[in-house]
Image (cartoon, rainbow, N blue to C red; front, side):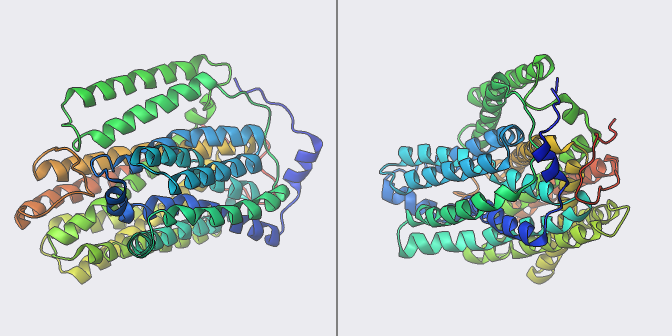
Length: 502
């Protein structure tokens, strides 16, 4: 049960005092830099992987460099949100940056692959909460009515990291040394720490006394890591029907059931039941999970389509993803600004997702027959439509909870979106990797070799991929339509009591 305690007078005063635009901008730049650290790390490492494997003398276990970060960063996301509601945003964000920098230093000096994997795990422990915390801090500063426009800055961080990461990773690995991709995190992290340390002192305070459910934290972390291991290894290192994958799935299911039991029996569960019961939070999280998970799956496997069906080089196939990246930011910008003006703000993403759904249906229908230019134009239109959902889902979730639950709700929403994304990526992988010959040791989308796979086979497989994308977008649209459209609060003062929930 949530023990609600009235906040101290100085916190109540801070919550009521509107922040100046200069203060918001100062804080925003600092948290954007912190977010950029986490987002860049997910894109810059991939292109340097072959070089890292050669120099450390271990190519077989190279995927663990990515998997270790994924496991840690996903598992700790809900913990960061809860800790931010207990101890405040500033101390938790600064701790995350510090852990991320320590992990980056350990990565840079790692003398062997397995020590690098361990360092990447530490790095993930620090980076896992930075994005959710940044969204929470924006929610602390700006009313829901005005918040959409600031979500655009967050989307632009992801665009910049998507564009710069692969290029920087390749250039650094080729012309300098692979360790530089981790060394550069130290000055960036120090700058983010310095900017946010002073700026966040002006942040309104909403934390209240809470207990951290340690048993619940252990259960959800173990369940997440076990599930992600199954999804990472299934169809690549082991067949989906093999005993190791079946055992991991069964263990994960047992841990999730134990976590569900803990939620019902703990005096103060890790994720409060009133947040999970909130229909806006539930529907918004599921809609964003389907939308973003499907989008991530496309970004991972479309380069294979460009190479195998359209005959592009590896470098050119990466450029082919630019319409997806840019379109998403444009869609988020359009939708975020519309939220400040429209009463029925859901109409924009409903139209956007409908357009994206039609666009992907055209891709499935014309797979293998559509020339490159119209194909990329259609990708831009699809990502534009999907992008309209992102600020609406985030702001709607935050608008539906109390200020002292913002961190927990935002962290939980990001966490379940990541889990949904991992599931959808695994489905796409089963379609593509299974269709070209099944699982083999180390087979993945990064190590796939297209020699000997005929074009007609790849066209047929990607018709299935695009059909699955249609289904994912349709599910996102369906859950978005079911999400209640609560009036967005305006002004500096947050709601005094919880919005109505089902």
